[in-house]
Image 1 (cartoon, rainbow, N blue to C red):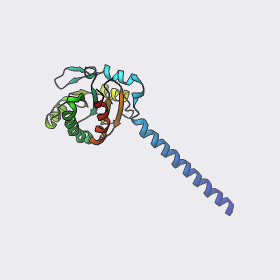
Image 2: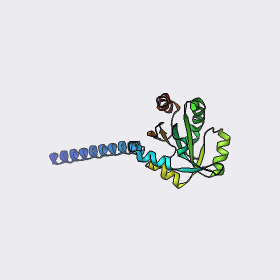
Image 3: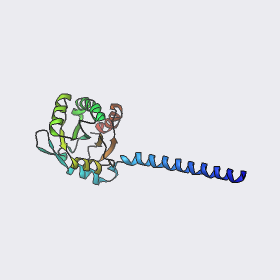
Image 4: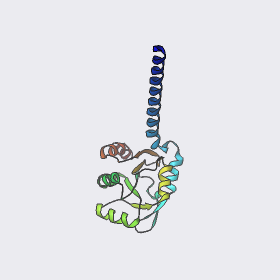
Length: 185
């Protein structure tokens, strides 16, 4: 009887360890795949540069117009707290590095009137475009498999996606990614 109970306990412990290990591996892979740079294949960058959205004046702007710059494309919405938090930092970085070839472009997945009011309130100093499901699809094509916001794509001067980030982005992390790209001119 004691041997049977010991075997049962051992079996349950091994099962729990396997379950816990499997869950850890799943979560680790999910976190990595959520923003896996679709950078590795040039198709994502080509898709990005083929896309275009209306600006706040209602004029369609192709993303290809910023080819050749260090481009930071940020997918966001006015109702998204982490988006609202990082935008003032983007404004500062655009001012600081714009002359060195840095270009932020915000793609809001929201209503134009709300985006206009928010943009005015925040003093956004870079192009703001407005999209809907097509913008979500573009973010997914560039590696945002979960479709979450904010989502940021960094493109080097040659048009290659070099980094992506799902979630709020700290100024320090963003500057660390941008400085080497801005130095190569």
